[in-house]
Amino acid sequence: MNIDNYNFNGKKAIVRVDFNVPLDENGNITDDTRIRGALPTLEKILNDGGALIIMSHMGKPKGKVNPKFSLAQIKDAVAKALGRDVKFAPDCVDAAQAAADLKPGEVLLLENLRFHPEEEGKPVGIDKTDPAYDAAKKEMKERQKEFSKTLASYADVYVNDAFGTAHRRHASTAVIADYFAAEDKMLGYLMEKEVKAVDNVLKDIKRPFTAIMGGSKVSTKIGIIENLMDKVDNLILCGGMTYTFAKARGGKIGLSLCEDDKLDLALDIIKKAQEKGVNLVLGTDCIAADSFSNDANTQVCDVMNIPDGWEGLDAGPETRKAFADAIRPSKTILWNGPAGVFEFDNFTAGSRAIADAIVEATDNGAFSLVGGGDSVACVNKFGLADQVSYVSTGGGALLEAIEGKVLPGIAAIRGDK
Ligand code: AMP
Image 1 (cartoon, protein in one colour):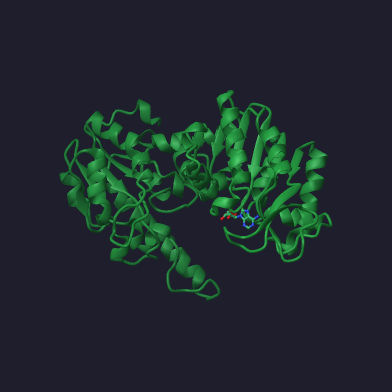
Image 2: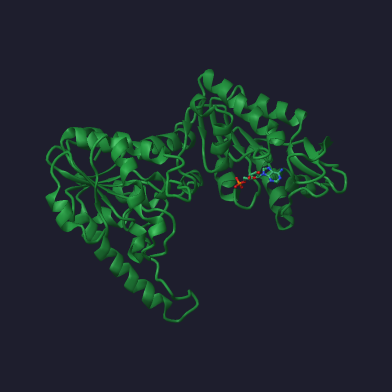
């Protein structure tokens, strides 16, 4: 079912959102992006005349009640965002009466789902190597079904708007969908936007397509690089992985970040790019520093010849130009991972050059998707988040989607398991 075509009037809707918002030591929300992100879906349900049951996780309480992760702390912020009262159910599996009492236009927030181990469905207190582990896992899966059934019993319709957890087969993100008919389960607006953004870079590609993969390590990005290799015209690899590639090609990289066990992998990526006709753009020069700090002394170096005691912390001028030249004429752009240690103000130039070129290409009609961790922090730092086509809210979920994996949270609703 499609949320736009559904009339929630007189219905009780249970909605999985990602309200795992960052809190300061006094329990105040420091960034409410995730709450704002879910508002279109929540407001649609209430404006239609539906009653709303909101469920989410917060943090990693590991199946135990822990006040530090209580959603009671965000109840008032949710009420403020919705402009109406929010009732609170202190135990998510003991909320049948509160849900039954709910009238159209009313809102009930359930306590943190992860206070119960059934949410994640992993057996607790038993090691994977224990001979009894398989039996414990089987038992927990049964308990997870019961838990999901209880949550489902509160409502007539289920909406999943938690893209951040869509890559997990948890009770509230996937299993619960089994207890609703196809016409009574759907993705929320935020999920729909995320799915469409991923489709734009994996399916409805306008060319040239340029993917920019940065960050610290090649090992964590290899699944994505391999999946993108069949789709992109230009593949920019930057950030810390630059030096693994430089060393693999016989370079001298000083103290730069390097995964010595991935040198063969780097050569293999270079070979595959050649075979597939992908224009692989690697850094040629870098800003090398004499210590890992913002105030380090710096010099521009050839990435193949970095002096002993120095380490590459950002892309050099020649590299920045090559990156921007590849990005500017592109019509589809995906950016994951910074080109340098952007947390230090003196090493933002590489990431900034990428961000500026993406903004320019977007202005010229490209679709640009930025997501998966630190590149989001990057565009936020530069104040450019509203000048790219889409900034994803999902870290791990986005990366798995780009790897080409089916996300359980989406499959559970669409039935494409
Ligand atoms: P990732 O989580 O793999 O996307 O990596 C992001 C991190 O990579 C950021 O914290 C950056 O500071 C770091 N990073 C980027 N370039 C470098 C570099 N040349 N040396 C060390 N760390 C880097």
